[in-house]
Image 1 (tube, helix red, strand yellow):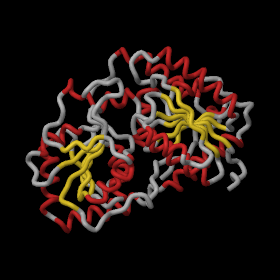
Image 2 (cartoon, helix red, strand yellow):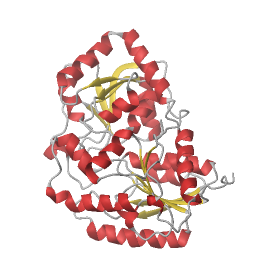
Image 3 (cartoon, helix red, strand yellow):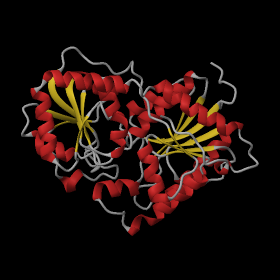
Image 4 (cartoon, one colour):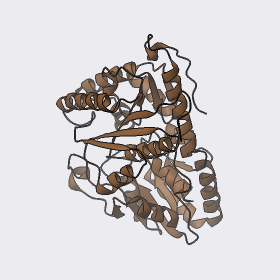
Length: 385
């Protein structure tokens, strides 16, 4: 398919393979490929697994380039960020993209000479505030300065929820060129199974305090249903969670392939994630599409997305979490009603809708006159609703 008028023919996109950004990037790249847009994917951070790499190169027209540079939120990343910037600019010179789509902040300040979209999947300052209840230490000031500079330099800033966009403005100042575009997942990939099991599933990096997997560990022993958790056990720098202590009451599934995870989602009755911080949550969306009832942390972003289709619990109230999980297990009609509501809501967060919104943003930037800095054009950027 040939791209529509005003759409890019080639996009340079960055990503990392640490968390959900990889899945998001491949979902968007696949949707863009169906619209005739070729994506060059520059993956930084720890190298993607063979399975992650195979999924990427299966996308028609996608060119995958790997650079094992530290990510901007890692310890002492300055030298790596500078080297990665040179690598990215050289890559842009070779592939000549019409537009640059950054799933990060710092590199938006590079001299790209083409429109730049920066996507705010999360950030350390809002993560720290949500997890620790206080501002991030002064050690994070260089990171904050890099993020602020990137946000100011980007021609558009996209966030997956209004709550995440608000967090950027709280911590880094006004983002007049911001827009909300919901993440999406292909509803044809995730399916409920008829033989659902009395099981609670969660997905999240055990080392990430924002996911709050340890709250599930604290209550799992009180439940009649088993609790299984899929996700990485170790921090990207090699540390174990909690100084080496592993959850005692959960069945840890480790990192699963997409087909394995889809099977678990389709079998489990409940998906629980009492998150303290979750700007969107692709795992929640996948579980909802698979027919799981949802028990989620009561945080603004998840309220924004799932009000009326989930049960919310205070992240730091294990008693409330245990009570809601026991209540679901004891009330099958309510469980089925919540699962149906979650699946119906999840269908509104589709891949094609996400792709169309990004193409709108791309077209606006490509049609804009380059004689004026694009990010100063207008503060009146509509939000998706």
